[in-house]
Length: 278
Image 1 (cartoon, rainbow, N blue to C red):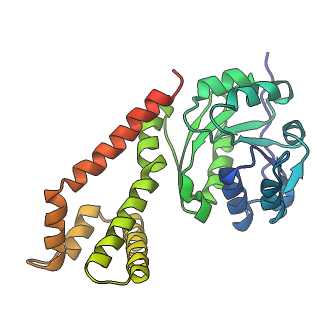
Image 2 (image 1 turned 45 degrees about the vertical axis):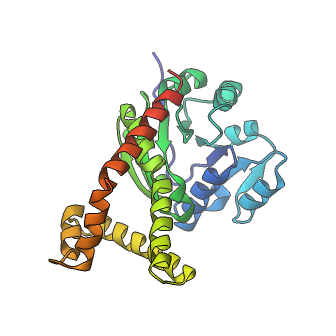
């Protein structure tokens, strides 16, 4: 009879990152700045890349000689490497991975089933954050492997809650999530740039136009997120009869603005499905 894996010690566990890129740094910084973990309980290996080593050491994270040392000294291991190398990395570390450990992947497009096969056990959580993790405003979604306990999920929700918001969803939705929150920041950057260009076309100085566009998108997103109103209602609240806003909305509708955004999400989701190994 297989022994039940012990719970991760919430007050003392050590967190290890396999891969020392920007996403790993964003997660580690968020975890430290929010007080979820002290940097002394976080480790990674940066190998020969001095700038990556310096980035982690700058806020107190221990940089170990190699990935093997990270695994041996961690209770929770987050794989944050490029999709094309993850199979080799997990397979190489497999002899060191213990069922006492909770494994996490933030690698885009790589399914739990494959991760579990390569690792040799299924106490594995797949998380999909997005790039606003860098400023503590990630939209993350997690899907749970077969041997994941409720307290494991809570621990990871707390970790990723330190860099934004996190939802739990079935893995079958991950292509659609890729199309929406994974690729979505780029759509919004385009919108900010276009709004700023519109401001310049209407006579504003470039710096002022860009500042107003960025803050307007930030403010609108905060209202949609925090006020509990449907975005259609928030739109109606701004659009007074015969006014400036409805004139602008009319132009957006003539251009198929909503359909274009919907198509962008669907196209990115479809491409995500094509890129995922079957």
